[in-house]
Structure formats: C-alpha cells, structure tokens
Length: 103
Image (cartoon, rainbow, N blue to C red; front, side, top):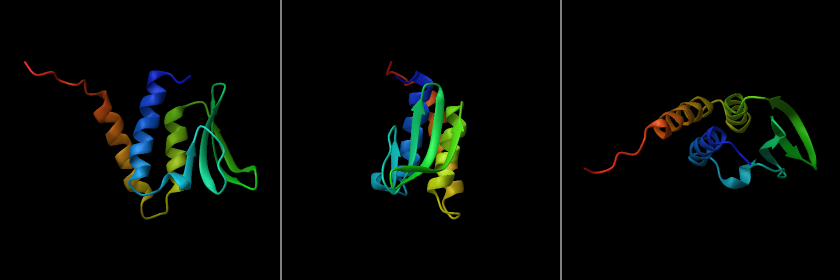
C-alpha cells in the first residue's frame, strides 16, 4: 500500500506523462513489455525498461521523487523531458493546495 505522499507523486507523474504518451508506453506498479516501468518492492522504487521479460537499464531509489524524475527521463525524448518534469513539479505543487469551499 502506498503512503499518501507516494500516491500524490504517482498521480502527478501520471498526469504529466499522459500529456505526451499513451498507457501502452509505460507501466506503473508492474512489468510491461516494451515499456518504461516503475515498481515498488518493499521500500525501494525500481525504474527500468521492460523487454523480453527482463528489467533493462534498471535503477533503484529509496525516494519516490527521484524515481519519478528518472521515470520521466527514461520515457521522454530530449525534446519533451524538460516539459514533463516541469508539469510533474507543477502538479505536485497544485495538489498541495487545499480545496477551498464556498462560503
């Protein structure tokens, strides 16, 4: 089960990458063939490219933010990586603002 802060990061990540990629290009929480994958095993986040049932170019992180940035870099091309990282950080900031109720 994810902590609230981890879920917030995953939500922001999904919003940022969905602007440029389809869900066939990536996988959150499990292996997927020919896709960039993000999985949590115990307290470690693994980012890798899934191909032929193997984890290629795997990197491990104890910090979800670092894992998300790595995920974006692996998924993105040079032209859109910076924009996705900017969107990701903006979505994280927006989600920190509490909803205001009408008075």
